[in-house]
Length: 248
Image 1 (cartoon, one colour):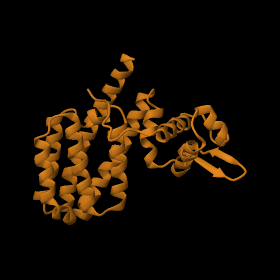
Image 2: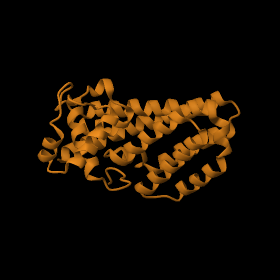
Image 3: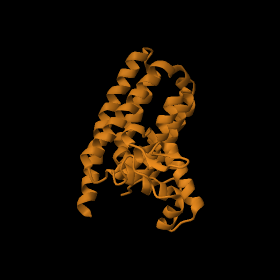
């Protein structure tokens, strides 16, 4: 059983960014506190000063810290300043709190579902224009078996839908979905572990898009399918997470 679907190896800077980010998200580095000076932090973590500077630049880009000349690096309140890209790190930081993490996954899937039905109501014609390409992904899905293969096909399929919709916010949301699938343990297994069920979900979604001339009805039909899938996903995720905790 695979925990997550990794796309590429992580760099030292990204690993250190994640380490410090998780500390901030867990409250181990409290809001308004300051990080050690760059040279001191580099010595503490046994890395070069340029590496630490890259890490701080990344943390600042996510809103977790603020850098002011003469004042050093100040930790921000992640609840007030954090952005959606931090979601995989939130999962990491709160991995010892299954109920909280499951609620976060439920909330995110709801947001994804709302965006999906919005795209059907407002961008259906653009999506239908790419239907021939999307059907090829459906064929690839039917021929896929392993978890990694199915996950990659799904991510490619979703990226094609989002690209066809030409919806900027949907693209940003997709990038977060992709990060969750690739980086968060058990998310991929929870989504795609039951391959036959997942194939039925995609089949029903494609059928609703192709056959219904009433966009509101198509959106409602897709919403019903996704609600059931999301509930199933959260339930599977909770079971997998709790099992992994018990095995430690």
